[in-house]
Image (cartoon, rainbow, N blue to C red; front, side):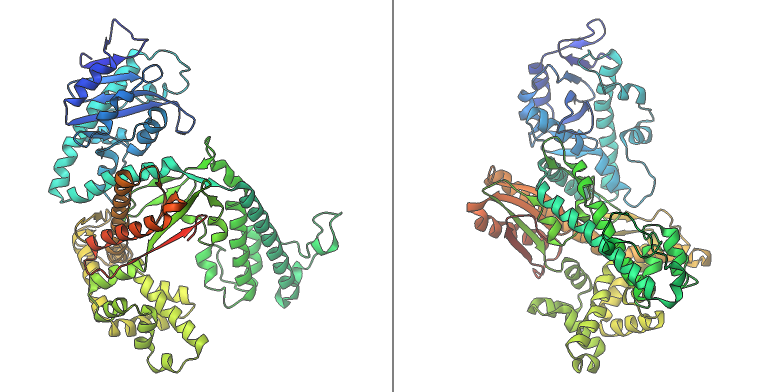
Amino acid sequence: MKSVRFIGTNSPLNDIQTATIQECKAYCESKTVLGVDTETEGFDFTCKKLIMLQIGDKDRQYVIDTRVTDISCLTSVLQSKNIVKILHNAKFDYKFIKQWAGISLEQVFDTFLVERVLNCGKQDYGYSLAKCVERYIGDTLNKETRNKFVGLKGQPFTVDQITYGAKDVVYLCDIREQQIVKLRNLELETVAKLENKVVEVFSEIEFEGLMIDEDKWTAMAEDNVKLAFEQELKLDDMVLAHPLLTKYRIPVQVDMFAPMDEVRKTHINWSSPSQTLALFQNLVPSLEDVNGKKLNKHRYKHKLIDEYIRYKERTKLANAYGTKFFNYVNCDGKVHTNFSQILDTGRVSSSKPNMQQIPSDNTFRNCFVTEPGWVFVSSDYSSQELNVIAYGSQDPVWLDALERGLDLHGVCADLVFEDKWRSADADAKKKLRTQIKAINFGLAYGMGPFKLADTLQISKGEAEALIEKYFTEFPNIRDFLTKLGTFGTRNGYIRTFKPFKRRRWFDTWYPKIWDDRSSLQEFGSIERASKNTPIQGSSADMTKLALIYIYEEIKQHWKGDVKIVMTVHDQIDTVCRQEIADKWAVRMTELMEKAAIKIIPNGLLKADTNISATWEK
């Protein structure tokens, strides 16, 4: 390839032209759009090295052997706000470039994220670079060459490897050009800009990671194992006392040297789904399995089933958050999660480990710490999704309650239950408030009568009557949700609120789906998602905008004193020097609420910001 320039000490001279890093810098500084890609020794940026950087455009591509070439002079290019850097799955490259060259990226265009923006909601669509190259370029990536970058151990790059790396740069430029046209046609330019900016923040969060107090975590894990075993013994005692379960009364000693109070009293293996199913079928003959949804319907009718579900919860904590969690501690001694930035609704997920599923019980979160002299400053929105519903529906009761700082669930319960609420004692009011709260929050998840009945352990008829009474009192909310459901089922997609107007496609939709009785189940699924997506998606857009505001503020005014380290749903977590924590907390609150006003202009959505020594909910 005549357009390729190799920078390194081991060049296949007869086949590839060479250049210097200064020549590369001069060329790149003269451009406004550049493709950027990397090759690495592996996936863990904390210990696997960056071995190649590719940068350029369709006219010229520089392939740099970073094992022997210092790329720090490219800082002005990679951090320039005037030069667009195109990457695919930018978080991966970002972390390696920062770890091994000390350079952060600015002005990113991530073709992976843009493809997800364009096709949000489409299942099994394929968003890898290989899929995008096939889709937009009609070419096929050579997987065999790509896999040869691992385990090189200092060997020179081959001509195939160099040209492979250079092609990626050209592909990125071509893909971006076509994606921009699609973004414009679908009015998705604003949300793509949001995602391309916030990817820098997610990269920083993943890069920074969280420190974990391993001794504290180990003690907590041991307590959870003990609690799970105690719950197992409690289940044994309940089986022994139950008249329908006499056949299970066979004492089995786990350890012949164990004290008598640690001897198992039944032979049932509570961790075996088949054994527990057989046992519970003595209580509920029609029971088909012991998964959460099927079993949960019966938990309040049978105390044994209720306690078994508690046992499963404790066992899950003991297994998921035991000492095996230390496998997620990277080479630098920190836990680095990985974010999936765009789910179907626009929300974010976390994996390896899933920090969003760390129990909100501060027993777990308090195990994550920061260095001496630093503290956590965390901010989250007060009833974010309820505010989104109130603004979207313009329901006068909800808006008034939020404006006056009243208990929204209590206000709703008073209107729905009337005298029953007003004459109830404290315990009865708590139960009624729980029912209304389930509806209020259930609206954000497209909850119907079946789900409500399951959640509240009431009959479907009771759930239907409760929903009907609820919507009689709040017709604006009924009309708002109906309008969303109708739009999605009529058009095959739904959008979030302005200004981002994220689009979610329903790939099982077809023009006459509302007339096809055979598609009632799919129709219902699309209708629920159409009600849910604008609420969850607009909330996600808001949190992403807040992440951007906070990150930009840190870079400009608090660099070295504040770091952004985590986000879970509507909560954003930073760490800062203890002496400036109060001042930073005030500014962080302002930025959270500034982001909220972009989507909910009435200013009712507020942020709560707290300072703590460890990570907290």
